[in-house]
Amino acid sequence: MIIEPIDASDPELCALLGKAALPTDDLGEPGRAFFRFVDGGRTIGFGGLEAYGDNILLRSIVIVPEARGKGLGRRATTLLLEQARAAGARRAYLLTTDAGPFFEALGFEAIARANAPADILATRQAASLCPSTAALMTRPIEAV
Image (cartoon, rainbow, N blue to C red; front, top):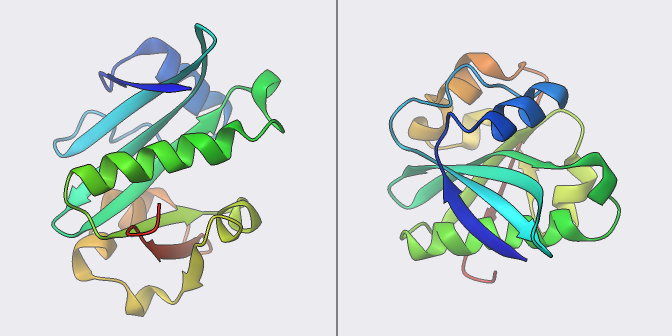
């Protein structure tokens, strides 16, 4: 699998996020980087990052329905974490309403929002786009 940087306005990204009921309102705002995951010449998914110093917010990780259940989501998340580490991040955060077990298997743990850094809590994802019931999860990036 390879990872390719893409523009936030990529129509495939927007369409797949919409179908997965993931937020699209803030894709074009500054500080975000989005990527296409390609396997065997086919787009199999997308993911994004928002960098905040040593912290990174993983967002919008989605795999096309026909490629799910094959371990590609795990590989895609690892590739995003490698991108984050290369950018200088040391800790990753994410918000999820239904993928907690998937991310726990990748070393993420749920934390109380009060324990997150202020810059992560101030993101549109945490402040308004994701419901307050979404789990906030974190893990160090050193051991990708």
